[in-house]
Image 1 (cartoon, helix red, strand yellow):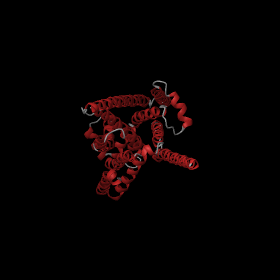
Image 2: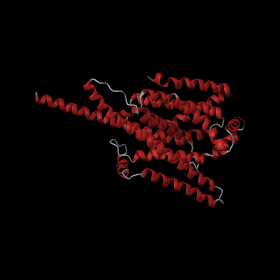
Image 3: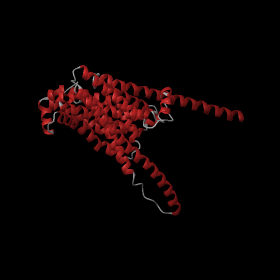
Image 4: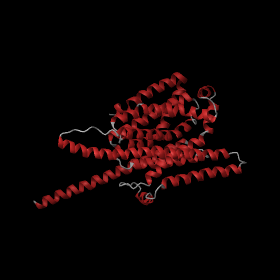
Length: 381
């Protein structure tokens, strides 16, 4: 099972590390290995959240996620995205941006760093909406009940998540506007950029998430009608065809997954510059890490891990909330990548341990109930 799921990841790792040695020797090998670990540690929560969505898809769309999806993740976000950012911010063509990345790595890094406020605002708002929608939803299973119970009651207010997200965005942009006046107006454009990029992230979430939810609901309704029709047709001896709408629902859920992965990858791409500004090594390291995240997502789905450890999804969403806050903070202040990765790992580890304790408690209670039943039967005999 492990080899089947992670086989491609192992192969890509071997090829990537060999390519690194051929490209820049053993120093490049070490950099690519470090970047791979960085990407995995920063994106473990991504895998858990992805698994919660991917388990609703059939085997075909899971394969699409691991093939076409990984091409988008590795080549799109880890290689093309930084080049596009440089091309837009420096107002140059994509070929010139690639040439700059290969010939003047310091200037290339500077352009990407200058674009960080817009990247962080977009990704931060998108991830913040995911977190807010999760904590405001009334769920049967609650991890931190003292917090989630009152928040689920507040969640009955329409559009509360969007309102809070916009308030956070306004506070963030106004903070930069205030700092701009204090520094002679040097950062006025930065405040405007943060506001526009944050609104773009919010709109993207509402559009893609809304379409995904709409078609998912349509699919559930259609499947229910299909099931009833199949039962009726079975009684009459007339078999029915499968639900055609599944393709649309799965496509928009796949699209949602890709945007989600893109938002998660922002911190990894930006954080990679703390280790290297070589675009080739960056693409190799982050690409290897992205492969493991994808494989881990499928592994969690096929093993039913989220069903067995019910608090994992909670921990991952709290990690998303922390990452959203970190992205918004890094617009103005630098935060070490170790802190960013550690927070996610700690929250998910805590939720996993809580799930284990819950399973043990349920098993112990079930054992006591069985023992009581046997004792009752024995006394009756």
